Length: 225
Image 1 (tube, rainbow, N blue to C red):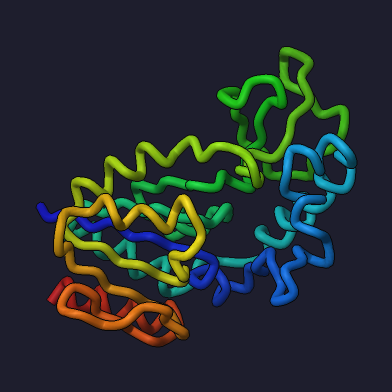
Image 2: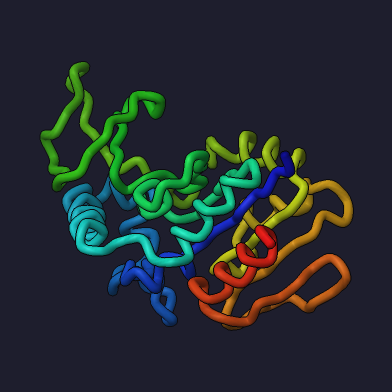
């Protein structure tokens, strides 16, 4: 069975109504990124950071997977499929994909501030004073700026063993995720789906310059034909 690796970013969830964190001016919902997405920001103002992610979590619960998420699930009838996402939402899970790696963490999980390996499911607001059984404060299970990307090694292993790559809704310009395709076997076919592609088509890269839902549908139909 051929192996497909799907790399997804904010563009696949935008059609579901998930707000992208970063605005055009570089602010995240009106905040400087280092205020709400860095260890220093959490240390300086934990209430602000927790509230920021509480708002994201509440909003996530109001949206549903879209056709792009659902069509990727259909590929599993013919292929081994791994989803490697930069998104912290749970829309791939809710759509039904079986194998998902979150490079930047998961909004519906929290972890101990003292032990990053103590991770818990969490669907409600997270407040100061919410602790685990070891009495350690909990924080969002999200990779902040300046922190390591713990799932990167696993993602590299997946890409090294892939036959086809599909890229959806990400510019592939933010590292370390952007470097993933460098680990793919030489001349691995790449399907690039984005309304404003920043790469050129070639013998290896086929571009679908459109929104995720229609682009993914075309690629999935092609691969399942």
